[in-house]
Length: 359
Image 1 (spheres, helix red, strand yellow):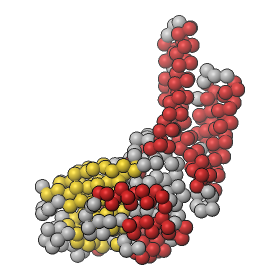
Image 2: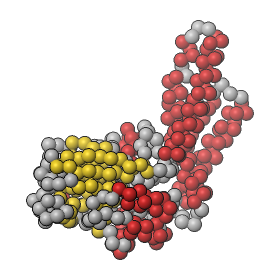
Image 3: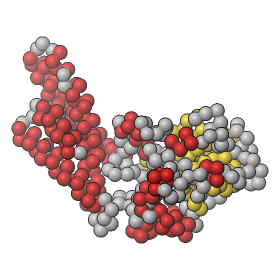
Image 4: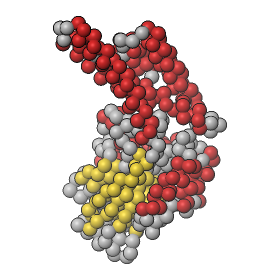
């Protein structure tokens, strides 16, 4: 973050056609913003920090990233005035580009903060071979309860989900991102989720960071079914589908709660199968398993463009519906909450409403 701030100062702020005083103020802002990053890291899991302060401390990482992207663009377009041979025109283009770049940086930062406030319903139709009748699934993922994702945020999500009147609600990991004892009031709101066949949950990588055993125990205590390398049957006999879930692949590193697809599918019936797996790249571990649809999250859709380009280096799919092979499709939820800076740009927060349709 310090190197990025230095780069922004040298290659953007100090090259702007503005007064020395204005440059000095902007450089001081960069320095204060950098201290904000340090304060954020120090207070990340301190529940005693007021939400208003925590919000301000959460912004600097996103601000630096967006200013860095602006600087890269500026590095290219700042050469345009050199094309003109007229000195007055060069000066005019230079000032226009400089002021436009400042306005661009301010506007995309404001837009990114605004985008993180709301989760929108994504309506997705998925055709499933051998499915006897239509079903609806609402998918939540990467809510990251803790910090700015509080009781009111969850209450709003529950309200939106219940309006959809789904057959099933699934939560595909990274639900809790702090000590469970600090956020029980927010998690308890999930008891109010309504659907015909109930709510199902799998862990993501972040649950491993906060005493996964306690998290699993508490989730079970509020009548949410945790799928731990196992499956359940959804719907009427002979006309429904298998819903399976596995632990996250982070379990390999943690050496506990490891995913086991064979165990998860051991008792499935002769019906279509929907698999819940937190990280999209788990699909590469599927061999010849009879899985029709994988529901994942983890990527946040990149959360802030162009960060999605980096995410693609680690995950085969970033967002949306994809046909992985002849048999298996995968849908990647962009995340219902956010992680780190309360910003989203090019990847809105998402509540997925999936309509499973017979072919």
